[in-house]
Image (cartoon, rainbow, N blue to C red; front, side, top):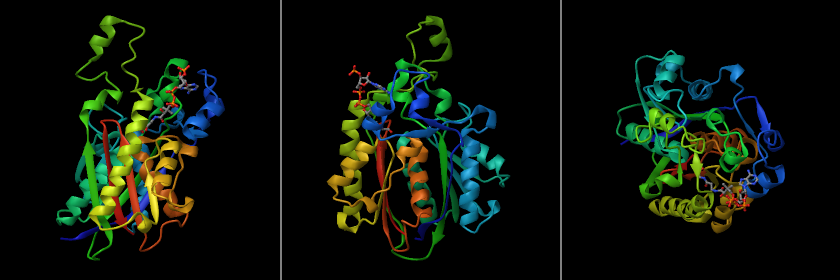
Length: 335
Ligand code: UT7
């Protein structure tokens, strides 16, 4: 069995900054409410004039990650692309990246696991590398939320939270034992699927059904979130996933050098930080600048933390996420 290590990281966010105050042009909300409940100050929303899309942002992040890995597009053996906001209903974003980056006809897999999409993707990539099937896998998380949010007071409970952006990692084969991805842990609980979901259009509620009823209150084509319900489950599942990762490797919470939690809500991250008694320099948050970028959030935060020199050789890095599905999980890395 080989080991797999992250050999390159990159991220891309649209230039267009939308502050909390900017949102008041569309809805009854305030900077005070948003900051107090979520920690968010601003987020990036694609300016449609730029032509940015979920897959093009993923490709931009990937280009940086591949270059930093010291590789070229031709060295990549496989693409894994996580998103809940693909450019098209089908096909997914992976094949778009293969085309945009002019890669050979390598395989491309799309992962539909929302906020834990990057955790799931990294875990899948890890298995392919460890068994020797592939040497270098491009793992991308990218979201274009702004194109599908309801910009009105009715939608404010969801709309103020989400932002656009993409992150990418190259996962590479390594012969160094005891380094790289030590373990990954994945979970789901589908009975809560509707607590955080976008129901239509999809085959369960197709376009003609939505149009036939012509009901102005039918907003099943916008995301719905039962915020407090999700919050309560998130704090429990985050903690479990982190503990599971530590215990699987016979580690203690004191061994954590850097925790990168999915950026869902600063209050959730602060709760976890307190629970695991981690000092401020051992948890990285950037939700203040980007909001919740779902499948992109962990990889953007990981890349930023690494760029700022907060992750160094030999550090124990724990990634954890929870979200729609419900799905959740963790990845433990010895850097
Ligand atoms: O990434 C996937 C996982 N997602 C999460 O983990 C998210 C978890 N949930 C949360 O982060 C929080 O539940 C939210 C930030 C989404 C909401 O915060 P909350 O403290 O749970 O607020 P709430 O939904 O209970 O709403 C409280 C009040 C309501 O008004 P009333 O009924 O008390 O009069 C809402 O209508 O706040 C109102 N409200 C707003 N007011 C101003 C909801 N959204 C807004 C808003 N601006 N944007």
